Image 1 (tube, rainbow, N blue to C red):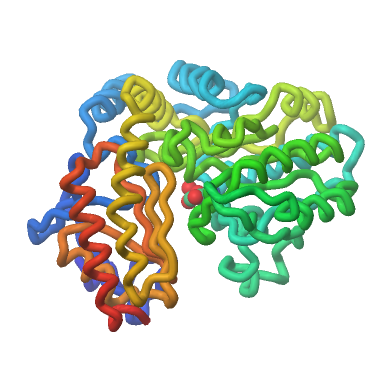
Image 2 (tube, rainbow, N blue to C red; image 1 turned 30 degrees about the vertical axis):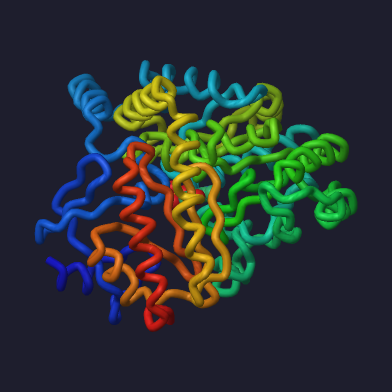
Length: 425
Ligand SMILES: *Cc1c(COP(=O)(O)O)cnc(C)c1O
């Protein structure tokens, strides 16, 4: 199986010539991923932010069993169903006002495409077809499709390779002031000048609130978002928050924008939406945006995926959200944050380490040099944990159900692996 896999299957950002090892998974339960050889790994990644309640949670398993006995799928064009309606109602209830109209998409990247299309259709319907460009910040990540790629970080993203087919958008510097540092107004003047100068061409600002994820794992000051909201309102530019990584408690608030008490015009959700069970994303817009688009030409919003609002995905998403809201999630995340902060702090003493930061249930150890991906994952597996770094970043966002002993094993493994300089590329 492994030989076949290496030769015939693409993995994320992979090749078929001398690929780094992949580990065959037999099954997973709770915080544990069990390999074919019987070894158990403590999952520190929550399968890329998504498995917040752990694997095979009985409540989520039950929701899916019940739904599959009703119907696995039905097209959403001209038909509707209770799982979609109930999930939409829940999302509207828990996201900030004025988010009120839900578009279900198949993946995070698609939900970003949908948000971009909404912004452009909105301005076209308002009689401003010239507002087509997007403004974003460096160090962002919004997905791998063309629209999403075009607003990803121009250096670490995929711009060079695809530059001739990517739309050219406008980039401001990464928000400079870290979360928890003292705010300085001059940290906002760059993006503010750009916004004021080019607002006639700009449909929307797209940004990951507070936490920049895959583009650099950077946590920035909430005041940045407050000022961004104010200027966007003043100059007539929509504000899109990509909460795909941060949604559902990960940063310590249910949605990261709540750190700033600022609401977007359009919000993208994904990843943890279904508790990591199925692929599903959502783009939620204000009634005003939805109404303007629907009254404009051609009178509909131009997007409609085949598997839109898949009932299985909607049912498990609804169960996952209720499970989260019925739990003491705020205390749980605060506890993980305190443990991570304390346990990762000693890593700053290591020669390989440049800085350490934590926010909510996210821990980041930034290195001076990139890790060797042919060797590092094996080192973590040998220590019984699943950590998958990228580039100079060793980062973790465990399932919320992780206990103190497991978390300590993860942070011990990180300190131990990073004290071995030859493992760095
Ligand atoms: C993962 C991610 C995406 C893309 O989601 P996919 O489901 O992988 O397409 C977009 N934005 C952010 C912030 C993400 O973390």
